[in-house]
Image (cartoon, rainbow, N blue to C red):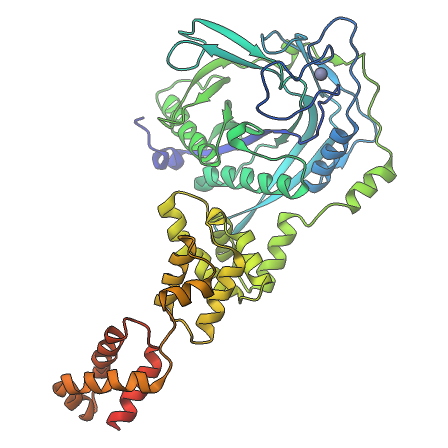
Amino acid sequence: MTVTYEEALQKYEPVFGLETHVELGTTTKMFCGCPTTFGAEPNSHVCPVCLGLPGSLPVTNRVAIEYTIKIGLALNCSIASWCRFARKNYFYPDMPKNFQISQYDEPLCVDGYLDVLVGGKTVRVGIERVHLEEDTGKSLHIGGATGRIQGADYSLVDYNRAGIPLVEIVTRPVPGTGYLAPEVARAYVTELRDLLRSLGVSDVRMEEGSLRADVNTSLSPRGSDVLGTRTETKNVNSLRSVERAVRSEVSRQAEVLDSGGRVIQETRHFHEDTGVTTSGRSKEEAQDYRYFPEPDLVPVAPPRDWVESIAASLPELPSARRARLMAAWSLSELEFEALRNAGALDVVEATVAVGASPADARKWWLGELARRANDMGIEVSALPITPADVARISELVAAGSLNDRLARQVIEGVLDEEGTPDEVVAARGLAVVSDDSALLSAIDEAIAANPDVVARIRDGKVQAAGVLVGAVMKATRGKADAARVRELIMERLG
Ligand SMILES: [Zn+2]
């Protein structure tokens, strides 16, 4: 690409929007009793309703309605007191009925927002609507190198996923984020994922497709509030890809506009390997889907008292948790973001809960443990060490039984599955030498071996004592408390 992201930003203001699909974690499908478990034998979780056989009739899943209301309330939306499902007509091999039951002009939840934190600043992302629909099946293309339909010998369809409840969360266009647009888009999906997880309505696994984001991007000329033509990048399957997809589209569209061209409204595919998007199909207009109210279903009219009882049962949401932890731990927005982005929020909170100070818990999880997790290519929360272990190690350091260097060795031992911190300390003999008489013999040896240093200290150059402290630490193989060693040296020479 010849126009860099930075160059594009000098002339254009990016505007993005996100349509996020979430598979709900109900035990049965949206309109029938088929199970929803992932990874079953193909076409084993199907029945006449989700296969769209003639004469079968759908029945709405009450838990899916409840989960959608939960999501709507958590996103500060109004909940419709009466709404209907609609048929969205299109033809696709993985959709057995040749229409999808969705919601069109009467979504269940409308007009909310989600606040996200980026670079220490809060950005409010408007939520246009949250609606409920059914998922499609899955086509598998067999033969050929890419798993795509091009070059395949034949295709198979698995309808296990057809009819799983799917919630679509649509944002309003988000203007005014400038250079940070890709990061704000990523932070929004991250915050939304955490919110959905805290609600317990979905397992939100992007890699299994239970959370899928389509990213809309357009450019306005700087200083103009006219929205440019948008493109829709489909099924972006990781948080990192959300950021990269916006960045790549901004550069590509700037290049088109700079060369006098016109951005075409179309869907585009994001390529994980190259980080660029390529053209998909030209985007259908709403009228192409010939929406009409679904005649086989009764309207959804959630009673007010039910909605109120759902609102009262909402758990602590990520935004409330953020405010609580920032106050309790005296953190700035940037410090909080660092914890969240490191995936260390839960483990630090658990470590504090079993007695460590917030500062110590953050120090170990964001320092030594983050480094180890990075080396192993896993999340910090997946390390084979418990919050209780980390709390015990910081307790031993606070009591002076371990110094930081020894504590890192204890961590190494616990990660190598040598046992609890106390077991590792005992087995490896890692306790700080706190017995002064044991230290004094090492100190006397150091003094005898370094007469010139001793002379400088006696001349008033007390910083030279560092050489003697170093010699004692070496002799005790790092097991001494350096501050105590320095004290004893000064006493000895005083
Ligand atoms: Zn079924």
